[in-house]
Length: 176
Image 1 (cartoon, one colour):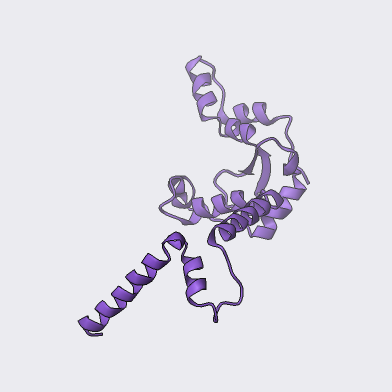
Image 2 (cartoon, one colour; image 1 turned 90 degrees about the horizontal axis):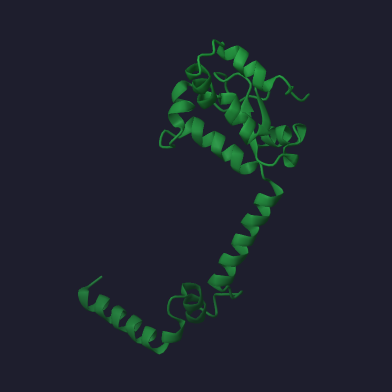
């Protein structure tokens, strides 16, 4: 396009923007007024954003397990995730689908837990149906037990890690 033609287009756009100053900043409104004949339904951008937010909130309320599944996927597959080195970097892979996570959520009654967290029974195993369950986040932190394990060793106790974990988790059984 020639520079003269480009300048004419810019001048037209500036003139149109001066005439419709009150609508500036709302691209969907500008487009709809400019193209009335082509636009069948008027869509206000702010209203669309609000309804999109409401849809996302409703989805999260209906599917609280979804964010947990997203976190599992990211930890295992995304090298840029802060926790990748503890999961994907160690060779732990995710074999759970959305349907599997939802099934685990229902099976373990995770909706009744205060702060549900996904737990792998074998810490070096992959995320599979047989190796996963939902427990309280606090129990999962205790199961990891790194801080408590260090405290026990500092106090002079001679306890194996297996005994320590059995002591903490003795009342807990795997739901079937």
